[in-house]
Image (cartoon, rainbow, N blue to C red; front, side, top):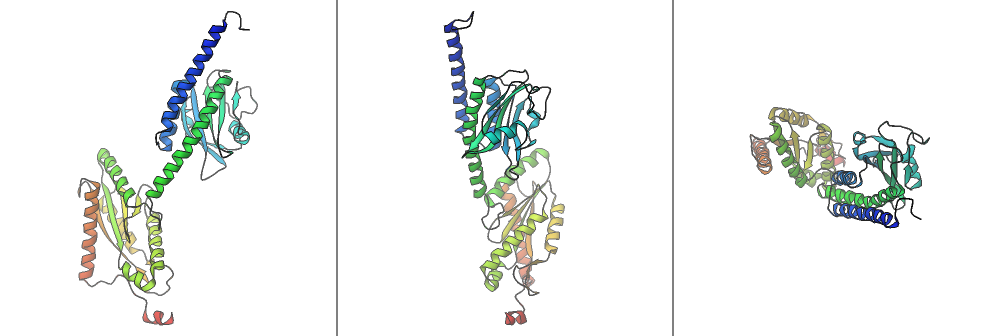
Length: 356
């Protein structure tokens, strides 16, 4: 029987209206999921749509930290909980922990009255949670909040649960997409960025440098006599040397810099907000390092580097031109070394070679 003052047709219209709105919401959400977003962009869009279409006062999404699977990190948040983005939550603690363990949705009518709530916030009184489940394993939690108590219904929880299911698949696709892009931009031997990623990052940094009106330096380095190393010591030793050089360069740069393998024995350094003088100082330190050939114990088995430095905007307006200038200066340095008869790579000493 309908309640007093509400006719059956009126109730039916309200039910149909909620169903229609839910379908429209899911259709809009699905259109976002079919677009290849980066994970951060996808989550930001989902937060926006949830707020616009549902009227929730806030939403947040926490995912297992891939580096520390005992911790959930809030990757996206909006409204009342917008400042919680980046916060960490123990995967076994509080309401998030309950949802992760049970893999079931949870509705809390009044957060202040629920003894399971560890942290109470004055601005949030009611909340609901839906798990993100992949292959039977919970990987995160989607939550929604309102300022008033008893503000959510079972229909709201059902909607959030459906969204969580859609979102789980989209997150997995976004992660796979990110992994494929990372592999495509990574050198297989050294694990460094490859030439494609280096040029893409250089273009981005030039755009940023143009806005900030500061210098940007590029360094191209290669190993002197790498062909001799391969001939004398073998290609396995040559590969080990390239990995060793990659590790040495990575340890020598700042967190904001980028090191890449541009070719066979050629490496690139991208140094944002760096003048030619500062870039030269860095390279001087690198050239002073004693870089030994891996697996070789004789004193003569060591290598050195040649290099060329170019600085934007002085040396070229485009990424390609800046890199070309650095290459030109690298080859000029190598030519000078050849003319001086410099032998930067020593062969094994005769006695060592005889002993082997």
